Length: 77
Image (cartoon, rainbow, N blue to C red):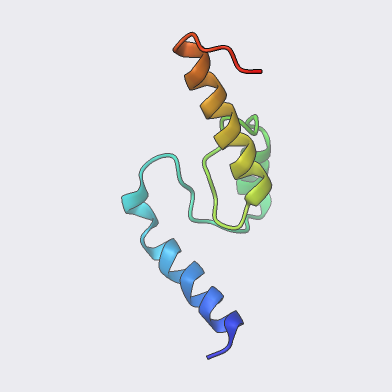
């Protein structure tokens, strides 16, 4: 089985298991039209994580960790 098929199967399997992942996950990899406009209107830190969206997911993860450490009173340098 080629690597591309394995990646594709993993993406499809992940998308079908998405409802169990909770509210912080959006299984749609690509969106069009009004759905895309709706996502783009939300600040990147507030958007749900999406498969294959490495940059946005990383920004949200860093933002969430920074907010958690600030709420505990830690100083990050």
